[in-house]
Each structure stands twice: as C-alpha cells, then as structure tokens.
Image 1 (tube, one colour):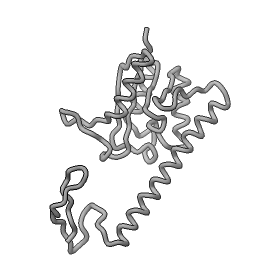
Image 2 (tube, rainbow, N blue to C red; image 1 turned 30 degrees about the vertical axis):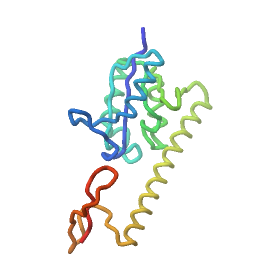
Image 3 (tube, rainbow, N blue to C red; image 1 turned 90 degrees about the horizontal axis):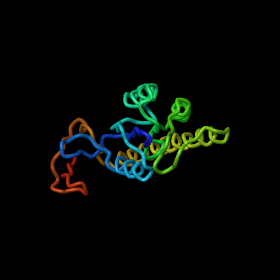
Image 4 (cartoon, rainbow, N blue to C red; image 1 turned 180 degrees about the horizontal axis):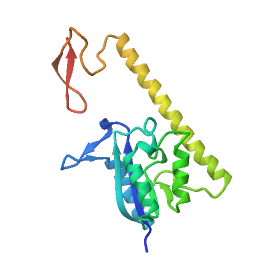
Length: 189
C-alpha cells in the first residue's frame, strides 16, 4: 500500500498568494512541486493544508492552526509522511522548529522536503543537521528583515511614498503609469 502523505504549503505574506478560478487562496508552485514529487515516489497525498500570510519566524508553531491540525492527525495515525516544498515552510525559529520536526519523527511520521530530502533522526549528526538547517532559516529571516527596513528607510530619505495611508496633508492620485503586475501606480501629491 502506498504511503499516505499530508502536504503543508506556507507563504509569509498575502502578496505571495495566487488565487484560483474560485478566487480561493492558492500556493501553486509549492503545490505542484509536492504533487509531482509524491507521484515520483509512489506516495498518495491524502490531505493538503496551506498557511497563507503566516510568518514562520514571527508566529509560534503553537499559534499556527494548520500545523496544530496536522499534529492532531499525526497523533491519530492518519498519515505516514509530512511533505513540504522546503523545510523552512515548517518554520524559521531556531529555538522551536527543529523540535517540531523531531516531534513528528518521534510519532513515526517521516518528514520530507521536495528540495532537501528526508530529515532523519537516527544519529547525533542528524539532530545537529536539523538544528543547523533551522538556525540558517532563522538567520535568513533576520537578514530579510534588515534588507526590508533598509529599503524602506532609503525610500523615506529619497522622499518616496512607502505605501499605506498617505501622510497628513497629502493624498494619492492615479498616475496613468502601469506597473509589471498590470496595476496603475498612484502618486503622492
């Protein structure tokens, strides 16, 4: 019998989400990659969950409803493998996520990534590799935050609008310019 797979897809911001024909939030790249990987492995996907606009760095695993649901189903033996696009989809907290992954392994659930393979816990080296993986993901989140703050600070120094509510005394007007995403750009006046 084919192994039963749960897939978890996650993106940190709503801007990273596409919408399907029914205008439902979708994460197609992760979904497609996981489906193709499971098919190649001869596995059967029995459930897919997605977290849209959920930071794996800022939001604790305990506060992520979909991850908690998957853990409940693991306790009940409803699946054999948890498959993600990359392990950082499970989270980016170096002091938490390695233990979430190990929790699944202790419940007999294999944890796989399309891009990184299976995360094992058979040796001390496996545990160290697991910790290092999420320590790196944590660091990437911190670097992204620094880059974002730097870019926004530069926009302010250049007198450019950063988005959101216009400052007091200003308003937004349509500019007639269309951006790459086919949206009209507003200008601050």
